[in-house]
Length: 346
Ligand SMILES: *Cc1c(COP(=O)(O)O)cnc(C)c1O
Image 1 (cartoon, rainbow, N blue to C red):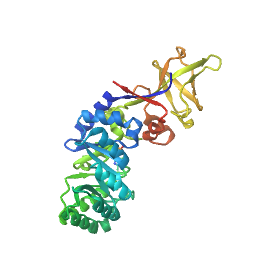
Image 2: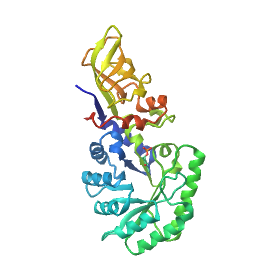
Image 3: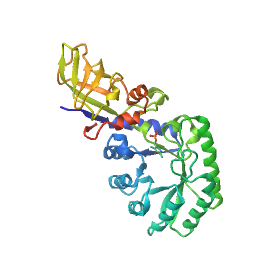
Image 4: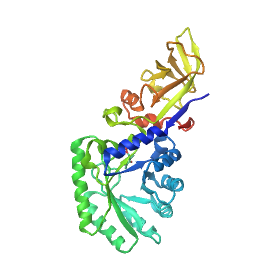
């Protein structure tokens, strides 16, 4: 018996349904970067497709190509971290929608397009400074994109940006910048069908940020934002639970040893995690390489009993722990090493 990361795909389906109802009529692009936030991309993609998801956010081209292999020709797959002609060639082969955030990449995309125009989504930098074309360079960029469209090398299907989701005032400024960019793009003759800017947090609480589509990862996996609305308020639940077996109980020190170490937990969590064992609370004292030490429970645990450390069937979520140690839930989940087996329910 060893530690497992148990992923409840029915719970994911419920989250997807909540997202659909919340953001309608906007569409949900499901973001699956980082191996679907460590939940395992293949199982997530397959179930999401069965639940009606038709847009996938891949981040990088390698992930996009993989998503194409899993989902077949009908999925729309958006990749926005594209670096150089080799990436463009792979994106063309896999029929990806490409996020284009610089004039240099626009030239490369146009040069690399095949027989069909390459579908691109132009990115305006609205203040995050994380890739994207600055407003003062946008008019020239949009005009160049239109010129390539007229040569049938690309087709501008989308305009997008990414926002901090940290302060409303900052996000409002970003939105005004975005609207100006869309207007300028239309003035040069572009006809984007998909405008998108929001991720999980803004998509839920700020309807005016939804436009045609929202790119949601975290909430689909039931990872709420640090210091944001609760799971109950959002109507989501964590879909992954890290579990581990009790290896031994020490009566004298009133502790038990549990079969998960650095591969699932960080030493930083010691003192900050309350796990669930058959309905009783047990507190994390120490994380060691291969096993960790918890307080003993009432009634006493037996070797072979299983603890739910965090996630859907545990007392605490990844974000609960994150809030105590000053990080975000995504980091807690992503630190569950690939060495720990993923098991899928149902
Ligand atoms: C990761 C990412 C998202 C998804 O954000 P969540 O907060 O996980 O919903 C959306 N857009 C971009 C550009 C991203 O990198």
